[in-house]
Image (cartoon, rainbow, N blue to C red):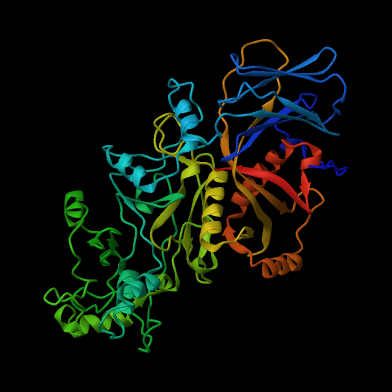
Length: 546
């Protein structure tokens, strides 16, 4: 890349190493290519073009660069298969030195990764970077334990009571799900998908003792949280459904035999639906054996199918008495009705389809250190809308010590979860431009453009001493451009809206504190680049681990 006179000045807090006189290095390689590139620079010095010599010591995994008389820089070489027959290539630029090394195999080749995995335990600090996150795998590991407590990732405070049951959180965009289930049915009678959606809306709620797991969070019932108090929800009202024109009525608590539709809060029949078997499980069955016995069985409330002919039946009275059908159609609690407008998610990178003007998100802080550990949806009463709190995996631990070898969430970070979902959106929506907005105000906080998701790198500071150097692992990153309200750059809302429209950019909504942390990570990665690499087309160059 050509040199540039543009100079960026970041706050001192964003500089990774306060010793600004030290030389910085970045190893970089592209997937499926056999070239390893080293970028070497000192922000306060310009390399001299005369007298630079480079030596590669493969036995010690060490590369030395003599910049000027008396200055010898030592750079650790990552675990790669170097081709010894090809000489090392070195070039100097205005603000950095570039060294290219030929490889026998690309850095992401299975044989290279296998070499790393065979390192003795304790030496292989980066192997977990090669594995994708898996909700199913986490559920299996958590379920093998007698019970699991979750801890604050910042101060190690115990956050929850013992949890024994773990399930994957099913999609709660039930209108689309139901339409997909019944949209191609041979019996084209109306209302069945709507009834299924409303039945889910009436039964959905978090249950004490059960943990629902999503890609970015775990959902814990508020009753299982230790040392936390929540506002009491306001009185309930019933409304007609969006699919029916029944008159809006108001309900007050009555004896169970007189109450039609909705019971008082302490008597509401709460249910969860297992995503594999579509089993409705009453929450008052606290015994886990009873709950587990239902998994895999057909459900009686939601399913309307004639097992004789293998097709749907128009006779609703076979499973639903007329009065039950009417109450299911017309009477929904205020908080339950919100579920009909789309899924709630976990407030991490929400889309437009997840938002509702009737729902706001409250940041959930650790009761001891007040660090952000999660969030929960609420309505006007600030009480958890579904009785559940979302704890973000990158803010909590499954055991002590935090980030220890037995901590199932030790490899989760905000930047890795963000980059993972960026890539998923790029694959699904074919969009490489994203605007990050404040989930509360909807104002733009950052613009992001994906450049290359198939890059591997490692960066650090050069060593001047002769002590043995430790082996290092390259890790996968996503190269990108970003802009935000930092330094002298400010986002103009009108310009951002034009950019979104022109480029059909994706839009995500996040908690402002998470966006602030994300931008800090992006700034840190930017400082590991020479000045000529920091800017491109008005955006900052940066990267995120994936």
